[in-house]
Length: 324
Ligand SMILES: NC(=O)c1ccc[n+]([C@@H]2O[C@H](COP(=O)([O-])OP(=O)(O)OC[C@H]3O[C@@H](n4cnc5c(N)ncnc54)[C@H](O)[C@@H]3O)[C@@H](O)[C@H]2O)c1
Ligand SMILES: O=c1ccn([C@@H]2O[C@H](COP(=O)(O)OP(=O)(O)O[C@H]3O[C@H](CO)[C@H](O)[C@H](O)[C@H]3O)[C@@H](O)[C@H]2O)c(=O)[nH]1
Image 1 (cartoon, protein in one colour):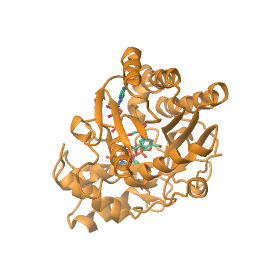
Image 2 (tube, rainbow, N blue to C red; image 1 turned 60 degrees about the vertical axis):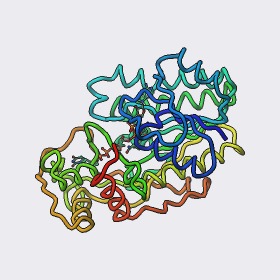
Image 3 (spheres, rainbow, N blue to C red; image 1 turned 180 degrees about the vertical axis):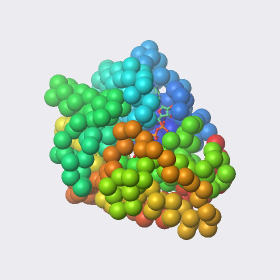
């Protein structure tokens, strides 16, 4: 297959490009390089374009007949989305509708879409499954849920087959250290803990120690980026035999607190983590853990790099010697 990867210069998308390439597929990356990196595009061609530029999209689709699209492009910081909602809805919703129109014009009928646990909002049960109420608390989460609605409507109107993969906390890096997470500024926990060990960015600030969790810090479900890529590949194959718009949670089903992440980093790196306790970050639920039974049953997905040690070891390898 020849797969177009929108956002393939970013963190998850670049691991996807590698995974598809290793599986023998051809890849083209479309990215505006806003948060992505040219150096992360090592598999397939790069078309530098913005999803808001319909002419550029139509040109890219006229050059190649893609078999499917994987769509990672987005603005994806919860806090930032609250302060600049127009940009978030434009990129995440309008950009996606532009992409879907370009696909329709060329009769490309399969899409795997990066959704998020943020579509659920405040958890109403310890484990979140796909039927959990969807009450996003930020423009970011709302924009992803809107796209999921568009995908359902597109299935009914145009026969688009899609899978929305709702990831929990993507983490880790490629085992051989050639690509990894490189967000500037970095907001995610694991890279920030590692940066504090490396003396970059000062002491780690722990956002809140007074949550109703066993040690008072927030609990999250960390899933290795290569396991996410594997799930996307499985979702793509799933769409060969299934009409409609589908959604799957992707997580390990096991939560780790911020303090547990810090302790694991200390163990894996053999270094102390300089940190201080700070105030809660607004919008952070105390616990977010996935029930991913649906992805296991229907996609045959099983996370293989799911241990927190494995995730942190791979991230440590990358952050100690990043290629970009
Ligand atoms: N990282 C996580 O923990 C996480 C969790 C849940 C969901 N997600 C979702 O997964 C996807 C990938 O996340 P990531 O961490 O790799 O993000 P990222 O920022 O590293 O990658 C996004 C890519 O999209 C590109 N992009 C942004 N706007 C664009 C536009 N208008 N046109 C073309 N390209 C554009 C960026 O340049 C970047 O390369 C996002 O959709 C995000 O919402 C991520
Ligand atoms: O420097 C930091 C960074 C994070 N945290 C804490 O660590 C936990 C994890 O935070 P991340 O920023 O790494 O991840 P989030 O759970 O906030 O966000 C992730 O999950 C969301 C779904 O709820 C979205 O999908 C988002 O894109 C994705 O990064 C949170 O409790 C946060 O408060 C800190 O204490 N200090």
